[in-house]
Image (cartoon, rainbow, N blue to C red; front, side, top):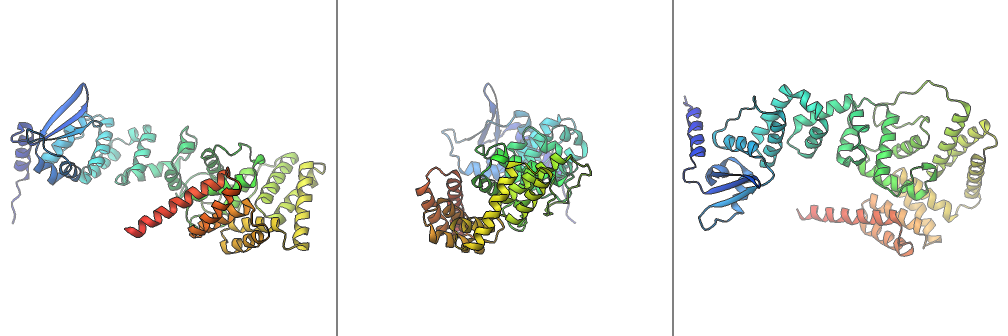
Length: 428
């Protein structure tokens, strides 16, 4: 049987800290004029804390044979708790202000003190849950920023799932980092109408691209391509992004009352309120225009025709229905129409059918090899297929023709970044 005398050992090490006998490290904590000097021992720091082990190995001795480490961004109160824990392995949180305990958690994470991190999280969740809810923004940002705060992250996830408006209606939602938004969107139990989720997501996407007009009625195909790229950044994998999702969220944003088919999250509840005929016509007109931009011409014709049955003299719907009818006729009469081919290729790309997309884009570019739009769409398609050299070739050619094309510049930038990432992965 092994006898354990940890309490005596702990007391002796605490005395060593207090007496500073034979110290060889000075840690300066705080900012002027309030700086506190802690005289400590490298052997204790190195054996108990990997952070300080690395710091000490990178620090040289001064002329007094002492290593000096500065900790400007740590409060004296918090560091006193941490250095005591490092020496004697004890910590008492009962009579400490909760904001100090939370700071202690963040600093413990910085120093990599896993045992202390776990203890502080448990203490906060068991004794200070009301404070965590009251300071929710601060807490959830920290929980997403630091991988070690998994218990706090789960606490925040449960609150967000039950009360999503605490995030979606906050002033900081539009500046939310995409990794946090992705985490929220992947919550299976998110208690929010699906249509509202798409609406918020589109608003977030627009906020990331100030060049997008606030009114989607004014959007061009390039604007939708830009939005497509933002959505891809939120849902970067096809297993997350349903092939019809981009079509559905775009349609839903322009025509909120249109039923969508994707089920990335639990289906939204449908309203039983009957809208006035003029509003129904407007929704049908907007969905028809959304379908047209997305290349879904038959669906667009159906909605525009229904809109005209309600408002037979609406010139906007009349113009677009006639345009779509002519386009469909043109495709039947002239299968080699370069314009129709490139837009069909663009549509297949949006559906993630990249081989078909390339088939039609290649045909279009054989007829019009200097079409900047077709080149950038094909470049984006190659990027999505991981064929980065071909992607750059098309994007460079597109930008030679149209140097100020924001979408092509953005896609080329992302392509370069993905090539660097892939190169780094191959080297590791």
